[in-house]
Length: 421
Image (cartoon, rainbow, N blue to C red; front, side, top):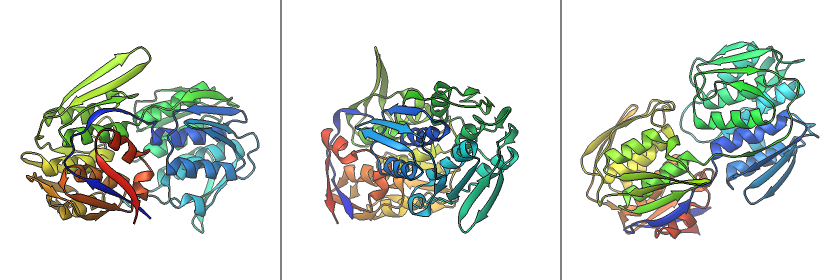
């Protein structure tokens, strides 16, 4: 099993290209199930979760071709609407095949998913929505089983804002008979990117990016070409890496427009951030002070501060001047990285869903263990400024969401290497 060894003290400087968004690519890959024609995608990141999803689609009968960041999907031979536990257990996003399979095939058998252990993320909103659209659904032996002659449009209201729930139901509604209205819909940019792809395939969707989405079902969708949006969480993580090291870094192929809440907090911490636009491209330039000011945050659904950036800001506050409070409102078990940061010398107290951090003058390298994807990123950030070397175990979590992170940080001057534990 691999681990990362991070040496502290280097100030990051230079330019780094941001990859396509994992959380946009995964549902868009599933959208290929909705058509018999070919869906061609670009800017698809090379990540473990992407590889798992492609294997899952292939075993259903989808023909997959991949070359660098380009993926071609042909679901004309789809014959096995089953998502087995063996492929689903490591990735919660696999539930995203449920809606498209039910809509296209009239049946689906999908294992209940696994993934990061950051709290309960139930799929009941997905199931209730499909039931309201006429599907008969049962849960037996760890599998969700759905069956319907054809889905019917319906008015759906989710009890909680759920990104994957919104995406699953939006995809299913594209082939349903009549109009579907999703209320209390997730507003994340990844939902909008999926809607753009579906519209290019012939779907009739309006309201994506608001809390009410209208979908008029059609009889069939056709093939299309689509470029996956840049990864806003990778963008935010590299902004934080530059900030925590007092660096100056330009991030290319991305936009600050996806990260208003994060950019505002980094500027409050003392960073200068500028968006740069050129014909056909966008970039972000960050210049950080020698020491940041502590900033308090509260996570909430988009467009508020993203839960996927909470751990990175905890790392920043561990070495910032002053004290800060972090309130996590999305997941009930997402402070597991705090214990590992304390091993590095951080001053953190946890009370329920609230963390209190007092910035330390310095951290000290130690061996730490990653517990989930974004926790892994926070430990890398802390390692960049800790004295000596920080050894980060269980980085398979990191490989699920960051493409070649050690190479990208190394190109900016970080002392970081991957080795076998």
